[in-house]
Length: 392
Image 1 (tube, rainbow, N blue to C red):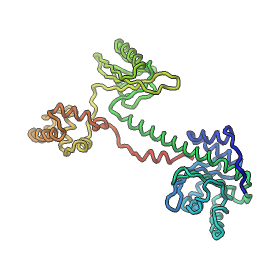
Image 2 (image 1 turned 180 degrees about the horizontal axis):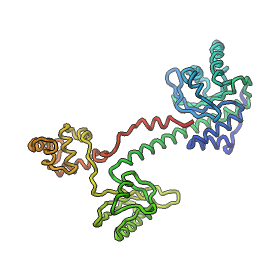
Image 3 (image 1 turned 90 degrees about the horizontal axis):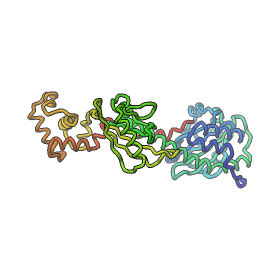
Image 4 (image 1 turned 90 degrees about the vertical axis):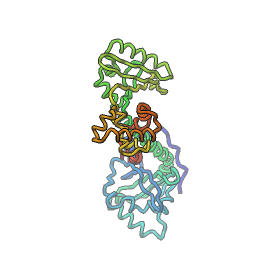
């Protein structure tokens, strides 16, 4: 018979490591090592399960440093784990259970065979529990004594596990939230690195905190703006003075600011905006978008066809015109007559609603096609995989 679970001190080592492990998987393993020693077991497995039909499947798991799951994964795995059958698994919700609680009397022979199978891969007597996170997601913990250790679990150990179940549920939610945050950040960085526009985050003194790959290229090869000792540096004395004044002024403004830097060595344009959330020290941070006179690169014909319902030939022509080619140059390059190219341009103007060639270029450069011109294909399933793959 279970007693009321004891109150868990929030300062105890297990909980400190468990919650720290939501952001650092190594700390999660350390927490499970603490619990393994306290409960006098050979293995502790902490995982999230998803109910699919008549079975539960592991979404992610973490385990203590002593456990070797390779034999289990090879010979049993989720598909052979009878505890994950829905009719048994639901019996573990909200309370600590042993196999005797999950297998009815008529299933005694099934229980014995299953326990013998687990014994061959190193798992002895079982104590576990689960909590519902939502309708189909659950967090579960499984403790196993070493194979051959036949000791029963005491009421104290069952009470202890019962008292920890709410904390395990909270930790599982935090782990998932942090994993999604990390995967979203990775996707965002991957996308921003391929923007044609240089992006820089700096403080009011120009010390760079982050920049995308485009900005790195522009600053390393630019004749106007570069980096010196980790800070933005304009090579022209006058430009340097204007840059620092603009940074200082923009740190106090909520509206965007703009600056054009030009000399006999080049030209660049900066759009600056103060970020709403300063860093921990309270220092203002600025987002700077940097462009220059370098060509943006060809706009993919596929995107033009999709956005403006153009044919393949019309899309190729439009992409070339936006890149700066003349009708004559394009006709010669393609080996077609100038009359054919002019007819294609007439069709493009009609489909895009542009009145003349200059208007067409403006419309294309303002479209989404121009902004994804240098972006690679993003595998959006990456975020799902990253959120489900918690290092154990």
